[in-house]
Length: 454
Image (cartoon, rainbow, N blue to C red; front, top):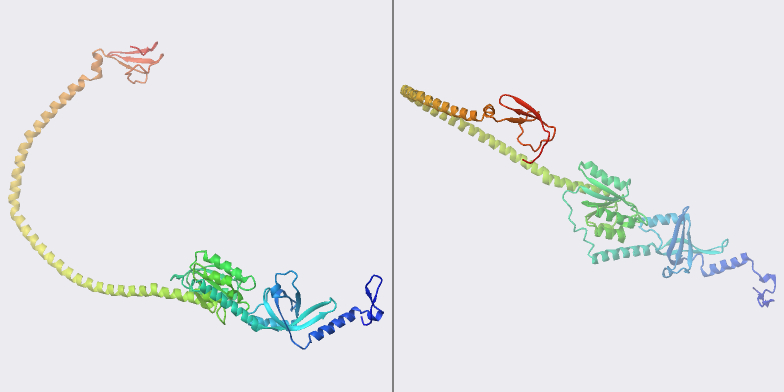
């Protein structure tokens, strides 16, 4: 109001005239003037705040900033920040090249100007740039703090101290399938001709959820009983590599019970994941090539060279054996001829001796045969006489037990109808038919009454 005010009916101040009443446009005009006076448009305006939300729609960036000290306060003041496409596109590319990714929780120093949007009566901040140096310093400090903490906890060299088997064929691979790095690594193993057994554990390797996804995949691989865990990624910007500088990934590698190799495709400084890993490589291709080279070296050392040495020794042994065999054949032939001569002479002596002794031996044996023949005749007759006497005695004994003679003496045989001799009456029942044999006849009878008592 420009003139004196008067008190209205209910005690409120009232304008003296209509000229003292501002329109909305006039009010917003004065707000614009006040903002321009307090914050000159040509003077850089720096604001520090923590990113609460961030969205990138249609090429424009929209950020809600709050004071870092009031992050948990629901009533904390919020500054709406806009960055238009023509500014945000180059700025986003510059951030990616330096490895910076704006995300909720990031504290930033922004430069720009205040803007009053009359249609919504909204004061916002139009961003023209940000302090990259401060963000890089913060990231470097966080990385250094993580490395120091791992060293203090004894985790920095823990995985590097784990032994790796000479023959490493069973591999657990942490990667995003169907990516360039994934194909490059497996291409090296496939082309080698060795029987590598690779189990793939899928994991997103970039983005806000990548650190925990990679850490979980490493934990699964470490518990799978494989010889080696390999983490590969086919390169990218520094921002894409941020997951490999995170604490979850670094601790998962450091505490993994089996060796971990990294081939994450970086061309700058090594990541914290590379530092704590058992071995690190610049690219997935180099990582796969080292596995093949290592197995080749073992193959040459443990198989090819020993096999060649065995072949050389075998050839020398065959040559020596061949010479020894020739010498033995010569000695054996001479010895055989000597033995044949000796045995021929001995045989000739024996033939001559036999020829001389044969007539006397024949006469002696003939006399012996005559004498034995003379003794065998009487002896045979005596043996026959003794055998006849024994046979007669057996005949008399058998005759005494002959059934027919027993029947003639008055004994009888009682049989059933089947012809079996009955030796006991215990099994008889009334009505059984009995056959009784006498010396001169056979009688048939039927059991009328049976009693077990005598």
